[in-house]
Amino acid sequence: MPGATGRKRRTFGNTWWGTAWVEALEERAKLDPNRLPRGRTYARKGTVSKLAVGAGEVTAWVQGSRAVPYRVTIQMQAFTDAQWESLLGMVGSRLGHVAALLDGELPGEVAEDARAAGADLLPGPGDLRPKCSCPDSANPCKHVAAVYYLVADEVDA
Image 1 (cartoon, rainbow, N blue to C red):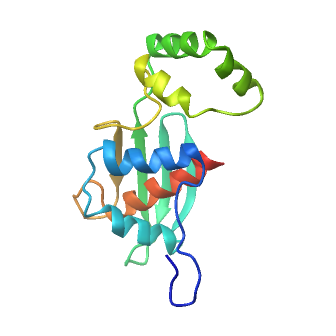
Image 2: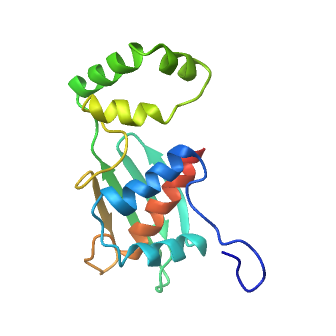
Image 3: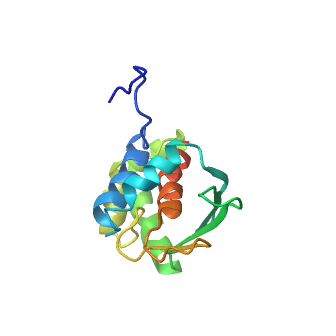
């Protein structure tokens, strides 16, 4: 949607996977829908810094209304050994998936097949466990929601 200056509003999720991440946040994860728009605004304003994505955890600093930024940590459900075996077995049994992965691609069909195999690649209810140093007890607070949206950029990359 063009703004007052004619520029297009910044969106999150520009690849199939980034879009799937945002849709999972907004539709599947059962997050407070009133908090997500404020998080998008924070993300668009560039308030998030030092975003780091690791195995099962995302960390960042988010500048709020106070002088000191808030520390955000989001833990995610890690796959069990059995889920990894199921996922790898499913991918290995589909020649098209293997060929795409060897080409450095991750087809969107993998998400559906992974979910059917019991190893969901996208967040659902209870999969994201956020913590923020702000005083807001909402889940998510606007600082956590901002980080959620910027993870879409990491997924795109």
